[in-house]
Amino acid sequence: MPQTTHLLNSDHDGLAQAAALLRSGALVAFPTETVYGLGGNARDAAAVAGIYAAKGRPSFNPLIVHVADLDAAELIAVFNDQARKIAAAFWPGPLTMVLPLRPASGIADLVTAGLETVAIRIPAHPVARALLREFGGAVAAPSANPSGKISPTTAAHVMGGLSGKIAGVVDGGACPVGVESTIISLAPLTLLREGGLVREDLTAVLGPLADGGDAQKPNAPGQLTSHYAPAAQVRLNVVTPRPDEIWIGFGDCAGSPLSLSPRGDLVEAATRLFSVLREADALQKPIAFAPIPEIGLGRAINDRLRRAAAPRD
Ligand code: TXA
Ligand code: MG
Image 1 (cartoon, rainbow, N blue to C red):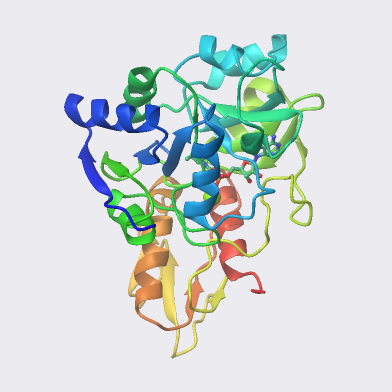
Image 2: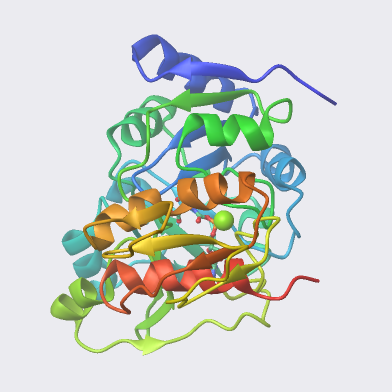
């Protein structure tokens, strides 16, 4: 049923309204440092079912639980010494840990899609933290876009995809990181999704990481291979674009009409990635991306671009 989607300020009143909506079982999108999340009370099965419905998401794909602090996290997941060490080093921040689900967590089964593990994170964005504190519980939140589409990094992006399907959007401006969180699992330490916390920072603290994730397995992140799909065809690592293509530059790319970062800065490129994909898509021409180095945030950027370029069903 269509509903009015309220655009809420990130001031005290707006956050109080957003928290009240979450308590009532309604869905509210909110900014995190990575992308906007589509939030619902993780302990309310009907609210979580509503998240899947609003996104049109295949229900086998589990959600990340967002909490304000480690005490709240420990009510939901089982932390060992290694998990606590990782939390101390990287939370709050753009890192999600997949940990054993605590049996009495009260988290709705739909959040974990029936798995015995739960993906959990403490976001660093001040608006997300204030909302989580005000709400006081755990918020299940996938990226706030229709399933398979480009992740949102502004409130306007969220409105464009989900207006009429959710109760509200808290406007906290543009997301400072711009790509989704890095996801790891423990025992053995495995990188399941490249993201906003770069691999080099993780390995500096934790030592070597195995690569995991399998796009064919629905319970692994990375999920469906085709993702972030613009309407247009996408080619990668293009040094010489065709005349019909929009060439998206990185660094020195004379003649590129749209650039992820003219000065070749990966942080800026990550911040701009999803907005630029949307802008390019609106031009209704094939899109060609210049090469992005496979280091630091370049790994997450290239991962998202490969999904944007993947064959569609
Ligand atoms: O930055 C982010 O991570 C954003 C913000 C809103 O926090 N959220 C996000 O959620 O990207 P989503 O739903 O688009 O991606 C969550 C990923 C999925 O690939 C899912 O398969 C994986 O997390 N996931 C969730 N629970 C899992 C579990 N128990 N085991 C393995 N993977 C899990
Ligand atoms: Mg997503």
